[in-house]
Amino acid sequence: MPLERLVEIMRRLRDPKAGCEWDSVQTFETIAPYTIEEAYEVADAIARNDMEALADELGDLQLQVVFHAQMAEDAGKFTLENVITRICDKMERRHPHIFGDAEHGGHHLWEIIKAEERAKDPDKSALAGVALALPALERAAKLQRRAARTGFDWPDASGPRAKIHEELAELEAETEHQPMFEELGDLLFAVVNLARKLNIEPEAALREATNKFERRFRAIEQAPGFADMSIDEMEALWVEAKKGQLAPSD
Image (cartoon, rainbow, N blue to C red; front, side, top):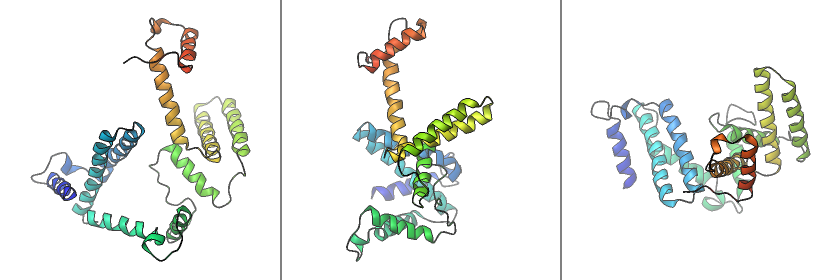
């Protein structure tokens, strides 16, 4: 089986005597950034609808799972079999309408079961379990959704809109770097709250805005004499790019 082959490859790479001098000395902490990077590369392949790249990137991500599991086995903590068994148990437990006796399922039931599982956690906060390593926008949105389930939420989007204006005014009133840093963070957090009330994923929205900026800038920077243009001339080109009248060449 291909998975068994990958497990054996990693086992040999991690061998302290005959293994790879790099792989054999890695730790959970040193590999974690690569795991995050590979997950983003999977998302990138999906966004580009590149199925060939997706097959490659999913393989790279699978390698990360096997790598972490092998390090855990080396330390006597758990094995890849434990990892797979746990996710199988979790999927069956959270789909009782398919694998059990429940008559109805869906996302609502999934959330109820997750809440019951969290109730067993010693950390009883509604915010427990939101990973620190999540991208900042995504973590902010998730924390806000968790808090909203307790009733701590504005009834509609007018609350976050007003908060954005409030935070922007507070930012503009500051002159020192640290207070500006904090107020800018508050402003971004308020924008995430507005996105949530509008049912928009802020991470996806910012990613699209970034991609749009890149396309337009690539278009205008190819204009003859771009480097010597004034900001007004560049802005005129930018307007053309927004209208779709400029496009980057290959």
